[in-house]
Length: 365
Image 1 (tube, rainbow, N blue to C red):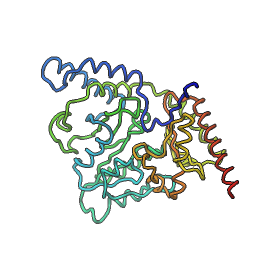
Image 2: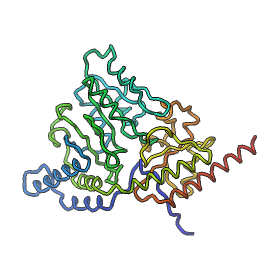
Image 3: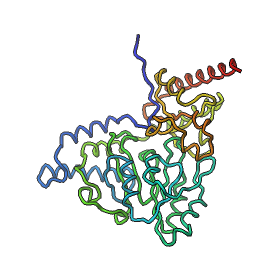
Image 4: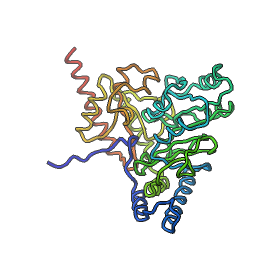
């Protein structure tokens, strides 16, 4: 029996490592010296490290500092534990890593399409209980479950006008769309074709965060992971022309799912081309995942970091979805190698699954 060729539509969880990133990683393995060592080998490694940092700044069009981390989650925790602010305000749509780090923070309001309500930002910043305290507002650039793109230009402007600090989690958007004008930005290498286990915290002004000593100008301890940093820089420099094709594929998916009786999450909001949430009414996401997997298709329900529990999505409930409807949504995320044939196969399985569910429901009535 021939081996089933799998179709990977879960790039928002982790993207395959780009070939250029693999080559850069191997280069780093050959230059194994500690970049903090003062001898010639260490100085050579340091030069490569700083060159990679400069290339990342250029690729991201970022003129602030870059602190290398073990991933976006570490960068997020650095902000919530060490930013020089008095209080935190978060969006209810944030990744679990932000909600865990910011537990107890004030929470913003969103409309039924998932967009942050600007007035709620103003109210949170002007809270009487806040007094003259400095606040940090954390809002995700692109939602990891729905693909919704927040209007960070508007939100950032409100935060700056009050003297607040603005933090944007850009794990899903870095390397795909321009970065926002924020004080802190978190990115993750494995979301854009780099290796897992490396990311960065982009900082507009290092005076905004407490130093701890050690490496990274004293803002992170531990020997720098040179191979991973070189790989991440190379991934950021790869061509983004595939995003035009992703927009076409996502449009085809949207049209077919809706025509078949499904629902598109955040349909009326601006969404990135690479991530979509689709509801199959009457069919639990857990059942869908099993059947898609058996058909050789990898998708997810909500964010991969929490989908193992298959609990109701806090993102969808924040948007007003009831628990049953929220539990019928799967996430499809597209990558550079996704083809039209992959999308056709996904739709074939989706439509067949939905037709069987409706037939079974009719027979049971």
